[in-house]
Structures are given as structure tokens and as C-alpha cells.
Length: 403
Image (cartoon, rainbow, N blue to C red; front, side, top):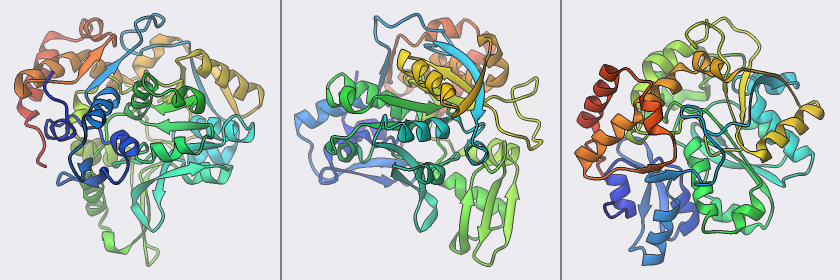
């Protein structure tokens, strides 16, 4: 593998923007900043010493993901699975304000109220800036509700990682699949993870748009950023509307099909396009939209939310069972084959990612290393022409990033 220094990872387009490097090395060495492309990227404030570089190489999910060689058998598309369910929060407010059925938020509240963790590290809208994300240490139900809902913009929940660990307290992390994978990588070299981070919760992710995607969405809504009072990407229903409120109280809305399907997803960072893990394979519990409909997409009629709930570890399965007994969530079993129809994008993505990865290696001279993620088996389900088209398209796009 080519030298994977921070600058090389960013230059090659392999940074996911999780913030783990900044969180571990500290703000005196690395800070997360918005790049020219509108993505969060680490900026080194000086020369990193060899130990720092070694730590980055060990932890960075942008350059390597691997399952334990002794892990249980894994589904080639959907990863390690203990049990598949659909479900929702029993708390009506959590169900409505959270994404899909609010199960991630309900589990976070349950962990806090049952005192299994001292806080939950998660992303919330930044105070004073409705377009920015900030890391929040949630300690109450109200905190979790403030962070509920999807945030389709750059977020680095691990940028304060050393701060979390230095408290000596136990906490759960709610993060994107790459954020969770970084914690699993770190656990191999830092024993504090095993002691202090007992629960890892994630959600299926179609990729992180740059902040330019949000700007384009606001332009389409006809809302000036300088006069924005509040903004949400979806939620307050299912799937919910993108909703911008101006300082004068005027409201502009756009449905999910248009906001995500025609604007935001056109601004995805490159690393997400070669990601083999949009489904949170390294989490204890992962949730997603349990879409109704034949093609896996909503019919856009507003209805009560429903989550797809996958438990991936014994810890995750135990947590879901406890939350059900406590009345925090209700669930129903689901056949694993039903996921294909609920999440066709994730199915197709996993089937073609090996072609995208090989194309990246040809274009850039190196590529992220993925081990034991079932990519060869997944590729067998792809139509050859579709697989080849994805590889060619990726080769054309893998030009790297400007500093």
C-alpha cells in the first residue's frame, strides 16, 4: 500500500471525514476543517511524528476495514446478523422526530435511563448555525431528541474522541458506518474502547453529501442562507420533508424524493462511492428505513415511521431484547430476504463495489484495503454490464481531491 499519511489519504480521496485522527491526536496537531469541496477534512498543523502516523494508519476507516477472522459467518450483502426485525419507538415523540421509526433514538434514551451508559456521543444541529453539525454528549432524553433525525451533511463525531475517553465514563456512540468502523479499528490498539464504549449504534448510509449539497437544496427552495432560522433534512413524519424556516417565519418544503434523490445525492464525497459498508456491519445494532413498496422506496404518503432493525452482535441482540421488555420499542421478526426490497440501493452498491475498488486502484495506484467483507461473493449477484459500467465510471472519477 502506498504511504498512507494524512495528506496522502486526503489527496487520494479516501478520507471519510469521521474525525478520528483529529480526536486522537488532538487540536494542537490536527483539526477538522471544511475543504474546497465542502467536506470535513483533517488539517495537520505540523509534522506528525512516526507514532502519530502509525496510529492514523491503524485506525482510519477510510483506508482499511476488516472483520475479525474468527467472527461468525457473515451474509455477503448484509454482513454479520444475529436477527432481523422491523420496529418503532413506543414514545410517539421519539418515533415522529427520529428517522424512520425512531429506534436508534429510543435505544439511546433507554441506555441513559437504565444507567448503562453515562452519555451518548452523537451528532446534532449546531447551536447558532442551522446548517452545521456538532458533536453532542447527550445525557438526557431531551438531549437525544435534540439530536434526532437525519443530518445529510459533513459530520465528524470522533473529532472529540479523546475528550470522551478522558472522562473515564461509559458511553454509547451513534455514528455513521465509517465512524463505527473506526472505533472497531481503535479497539485493537486501545483497551479503553472495550472498557468505556459498550454500545455502538449505527444506521444505513447512502453517503455523505458535501455542504454544497445543502446549499444547492436551499437554493432550490428559494431560501437565502443568511436569513435561515431553522432547517431539517427530513423527519417530523416519515419520510418527512426537507424544511427551511426563514427569519421572517416563511416556510419552504421539499419532499424526500426530490431533496435526496435529485439534489443531495449528487454531492457525495468520493470515498462514499467506493464504500463496501453502507449498512453498518461493525455496529452492535443498525437501523434503516423499512420502506413500504415493491421497489424499496417510499410512496411518499406520510405515515408513522417504521425502522429496519438488524442486530449484529450478542451485545446488540441483548440490548434490543432488553429495550423490548422495558417497553422502549416494539418489534416484529422479518425474513432476511425482505431487506433486498426495502434497501435495494444498499444491495446494488455492495454488488458493484469491488469493481469500483479495482478501478480506483488502477487510477490512483492504491486503494483502501477491505478484508472479509464478502465482496467477491457479493459481486456474483451483479449483472456483468452493470458491474463494468460502475468500474469504468469510477475510473473516470477517481482523480483525488485538491488540498
